[in-house]
Amino acid sequence: MGGTEDPKLGMKCPACHARNPRRLGRKEAFEVLSCQSCATIYTYSGSSTPRDYGDYYTEENLSVPDSIHKRLDEIVAGFSGYRMHNRMLEVGFGAGFLLGAAGRAGWGVEGVEVSISAVRHAESQGFKTFCGELAEARYEGASFDVVIATELLEHLQDPGAMIREIARVLRPGGLFWGTTPNPRGLSPRLLGLEWSVICPPEHLQLLSENGVRNLLVEAGFRNVRIDTEGTNPFELVKFRERKRKGGLLPNDGLATFTDCDRVNAGYRLNETLTKSGSRRVVKNFLNSLLRLSHLGDTLKIWAER
Image 1: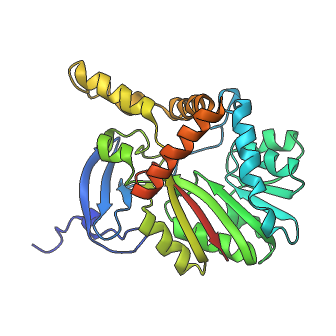
Image 2: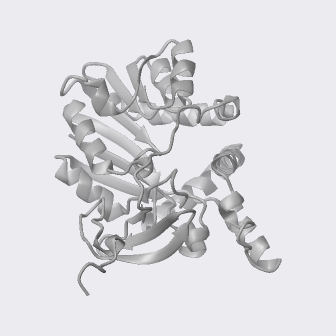
Image 3: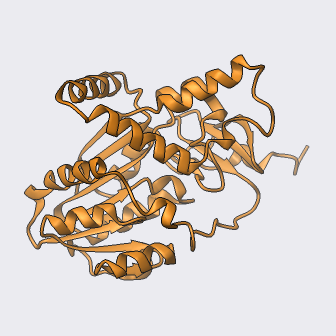
């Protein structure tokens, strides 16, 4: 039987490096696998052609409600204790909303992004940017107080390499803050492969809580804290409605719940839950439950170099 081994079953987990995946199924042209050691979800296609993000950002996704800007200001305020050289870097800054919040807080902030449309937009706002991968920017080691990477790691074939480079450019005692989808959250448990966040080739893998912790420790981070927060009830409701109408058809499932739908639904939910003090209490209570149960759909990473 030599030469007949399935290459997918010998794939190394991008988080814990184990070679014991189980198949979850197929989505698009990708085989979706789950690591039986750390529960990270990753994909196999037999092709290494990356997605082109050059024109990913358009007028449609370059603006957000005012409530989001307020929340980003609160997030950036939480980094003040790490301000030593007043240098902050955002990797994969996208529409540049966190760059704006950092600028409003007086940080000397820079950004790295592969999307040329996003880079042009940020430069038009006066930000210093580099178009390309983080390693290509060749920043000096230990040169930033804070490095941010939100909703980025899931797009990468090798998230460990990115985390190691982030560790290199952070000063000792500096902070890495990031977010990435949680493959063990409420939505993936209920929706399985129909969860719109499992969407290769845009998302190549989803790091589990244990998986991302392993990569951070390997890269030399300490005082690692990972919380799980948030869920998207709009997608859960949509899934239930379609099931009630006779099931999910091959071309009529949650694949039609696009990235833009997902983000806009999140904006609407946040706006609804922050309109009053009582609603903010409800939001905080729900997030507390999701943290305690580890069922939040997003992993929030806080790690010191």
